[in-house]
Length: 373
Image (cartoon, rainbow, N blue to C red; front, top):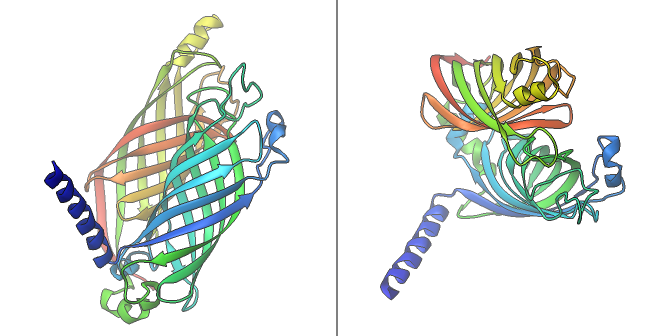
């Protein structure tokens, strides 16, 4: 047993040494502060709150060959954030997330990037009819998390860098349980990073290596996808039973740059809860939703982050949201050339409808080499 434990420890140390030798990552921390947006009259209790947070994380940078894909430095970031919402009703939160973060060079030491994040939040004071009846922002301990933002990165030397971030955080349960008004809070953050295992800072060495990798050439790809997804929801606060949602959609991705696709598509889903609502109201309502959508996809390696705006042509008359437009945020991981898997959040204005799990199949793909002007 002792020999096995010693073997495992040595294996972990060897893995850590391998990471360092491959020059893969930065470790960093940041402080964040901002305010909570009272996005409806029902959540006026958040107006005077000043949330303060602290984050830590690891950033994995691609090697310089990836510069030719997007004229940027694509990075993958895994992190943790703690927030005190400065509000007795909301309590405190813990967020574990994954973030896509491409950096574009402004000067020899200054880089600008945008950020798209998705994760899971654990909050400590959900709605309870007896102990916390005033909290209509969230009703579950575990919730979904989405974040977008912008960041400036200043390289101090071959090991250290500072970042100034402006981020917008959102938390909700995707319509799984009511009440679910969500929490929306923009923040300003200041932090620093330490670069492991590199003789020279990766960001400072770009100009020495770019000419080897044809930065003016990339592969232009257009894809047609079929998606199958499913979710579930309750009808009203306090329901213990959940009703299933089944959906299919088709999307066409038209490549417009090394990093971006324009997306158009159609979407259909069936909501079994509508059948129950129609029985209660003694009317005949079809539980069918049909819509068209248009949006943008950000592509970094195996990860694809898209945001889309949809418009309903068909939806039930008793549908509570009373709007024909919706928006959707989706994070997909490309398993191989044909198959992708991921999660998506659909919302109407500031109200989440549902979060779904989806599988996608690429049944048509066309590629060609594209030279930049």
